[in-house]
Length: 420
Image (tube, rainbow, N blue to C red; front, side, top):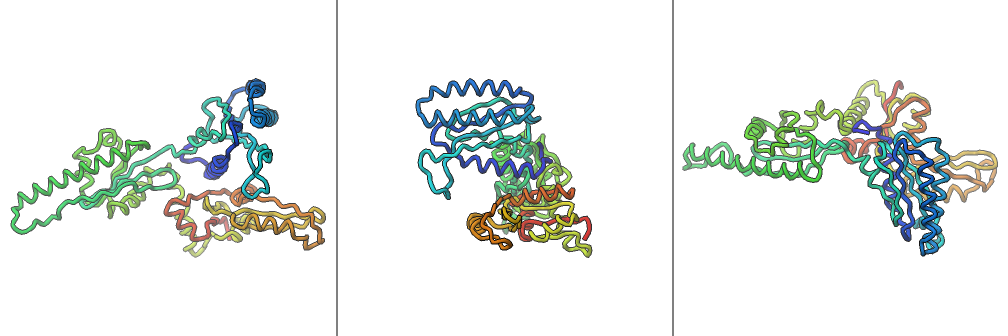
């Protein structure tokens, strides 16, 4: 999984990680299991049987029971696999206390829950842990942006330092130059003024270089550097070799921009799209650009809004669906068990619980039965299911980028169409 990774896969991974990170056990009874590719599942089951036996020595009755029950549940789940998946398998299982909306949070009210994840990248090594939380670092590493690109946007007045990762631009630092203007004050000789100005520029360049070393060679080391700015300042800065040699030798390209500083960082990214084309932020920028272009065109092969996009998928004329990662909607489907009547709705997370309770408590409008079954599905997963049926694609758009924020003003969901 690189920067070209399926945005839906990344969305699912972020969602499951967000959910699992909130889970806490009352003791060291939550089991985390990572199985690398090609590891025989019978070896894993044999290992878990040994751990089951060792768990019998745990002093706490509840912890012992919960650990052994979790191991049994995991071994039962492994029997459903004929072989280890190509990228391996991650399983998390344990007795978890009821949620905040449950009627009881007393000891003994825990429920045994199991989560299985087929990772987007190969599991590096076998891991078995019992703890009061799930071990998620291996999965988190898999979805970290693999490529970080540094941006320096500089002119005589200011410099901006930023980092571009797959889905966002971070403006890390803005440095003002303090360099005098080109016109000297009265009473100064031209030569003295130029010497002072050159000294100021030299000090300014050194400060920028120090900040660049701290920002780009710190905790998140960049893989390359792009330098932009208006006028020749950027060229003087690079020719003077003020940068740390590791950065100086890793300049990917130099681009001319109208601005420096904060605005210059964004303009530099736009001007360097060819270099950054493998980054997700450029992919999303192109998708939003196409979306906006279709909105303003006469043909208008685009729709936006929940109802409109669902309708286009039902008709089969959508070829690419765009949806904000934090759209925060859930699909509910209430089915009468007696007559089969169906009622569907797409609601916000805030209204999820009251809406579910309302659907369950209301009698069927067709046969007056109170036997109502309600299922819920993440709205983005609903879009994916419908898209698969008609051969369309779903692109999950970051809400952190400028283009992503702009897209949210259209309701956070839209579709590029094959035809109207």
